[in-house]
Amino acid sequence: MPAGTPGPAPAGQDPDAPAAAPPVRLTVPDAGLDVPVDPLTPTEQDLASRSLVPRRPRTATG
Image 1: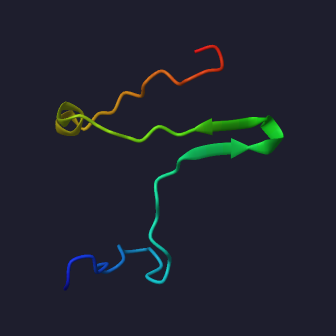
Image 2: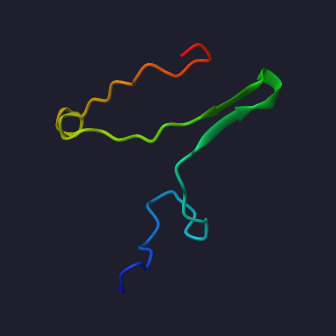
């Protein structure tokens, strides 16, 4: 299979569905919410321990 060619879809997924992209914003208009989504960048230690501890979320006051 040439590089860049998508492989078979994982079990339970639609093989004709478009590739997913990570979220960049979370928007809920009725709640007045529109915030950026930080990328998930686990460290080697996080991956080794299979544990992720979320950072404190950004707020309007910092």
